[in-house]
Length: 276
Image (tube, rainbow, N blue to C red):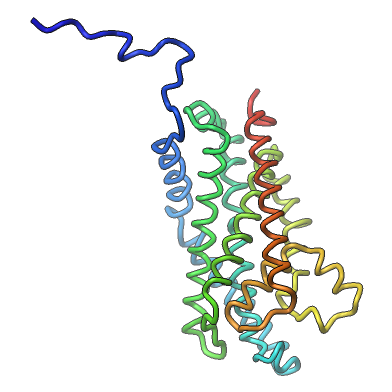
């Protein structure tokens, strides 16, 4: 005769840790949710940024290409192309993580994210992972469009620089997006961060010009802008020439990402502006 099942084997005592380490299943589920959320509207979230970036390239190449000539030893269109690729990547990384949290707060579905047994670190990995995936999909889409577009040449010279600076820059903006999504109470707040912080720092990062061609004051300001190191390092992976010190840029981005990660982790763990 079979003995009755032991209820303690199925239902541990209160306070006993059931998931001893990482909740891989929950982490995978939330990550896939983040990816499917933007992939369902890929025409808007992936291909539209590619077309917009290509228009930037066409307009600036036509308007300034003939006047500027070579920049850092390459044609202006070739100089501009990689910067526009990574600019599209980091802007979409910010948009993905910030909109994900903000929409969940506005719709009241944030409880569905906070209730499952996911730690603050696991939540952060899923949000950043989803934003990073969108960033690279946008970057690949923009690169493919530029590769077949006439008048611009975007061969990869150093894949390691492209991967490192593209990834670190996208992580930085996705973490800023997490902070923005937590802080914002409405879409106007997120739009204010985009218009008054992200856009100015992106446009003043050397995407459209070489730092050595501007006055010393603006050059100093640009070197204090972490977005500059993202653009410069990523672009050097294509054209083989940098506008600054690559090692310094790599270290700066690593430090900034670690600090932002710790801040986001602390905010998610305390539930600031997330838990009633």
